[in-house]
Image (cartoon, rainbow, N blue to C red; front, side):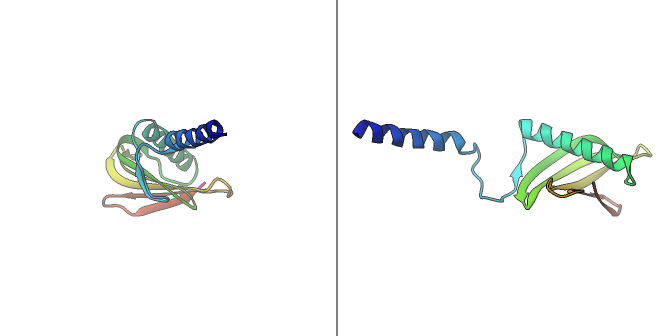
Length: 124
């Protein structure tokens, strides 16, 4: 009986250690993205920009991602500070937010605010 309790306790401790994130954060807190998380977020940004340019939105291409962070809200909010190239080949520093709520139709809302320009908000 003691061995079973010890094994159960060991299993619980092991499970907790395996599922604790490398960087502890509060539930719903904004987390800076690095490594594979940053790569996935960059792909998400490129996909969103291509969907915008295919519709009624502006045409931008990613030049450089300076920072990216993610936060679990009602859905997922990913924030970027990036350099974007517009259709005139001008490069602008922009803050982009992608609020993803996949259970909704048109559940992705993209907000682009570039230095010296107005904000663009589109959903797809």
